[in-house]
Image 1 (cartoon, rainbow, N blue to C red):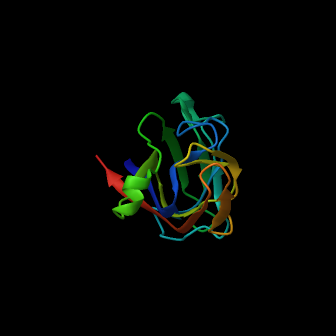
Image 2 (image 1 turned 120 degrees about the vertical axis):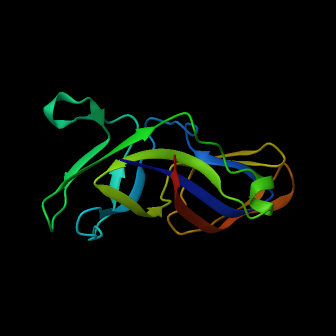
Amino acid sequence: MVNFMLMIAADLENLTNLQPQGGVDDPDFAYHFKVKCGNCGEASQKETVVSLGETISQPRGKGECHLLQKCKFCGRDGMITMIPGRGKPLTQELSESGQFAPLMLLECRGFEPVGFLFGAGWRVEAISGTLYENVDLSEDEFTEYDEKGEVPVMISNLRATFDVVK
């Protein structure tokens, strides 16, 4: 079992607090990523989708997880359990310093996450206080004009990584 922290970064212009729509532990937010088999090393062709609100019973009554699937190449089982309570929004300060913000901790058995797709369902706040909800980042960019602050706002240069956590 290995724990991976999904870390996100982006260039935020006149924005702060980028996070899933319902907060960092939103049970309805769909995380889209690709996984690699820990046995044969084969990466999935399609992205895997998991959310905190959907759980699956583990085999042999060992609790619940958020993803349970077989590798299509070697047939080995793999599972991922999401661990809430460790994520934080991406702030303008972190963005300006080029740092990543922790979003979600994943406990992985048999699989390793290898690529994250941002997709839809994000919330971000303008420096003026204007709130942008249900932001779609599937095009890797968001641009708008903040009427209240009278400035353009933008999210660009989206990046994600998975850090091994003890």
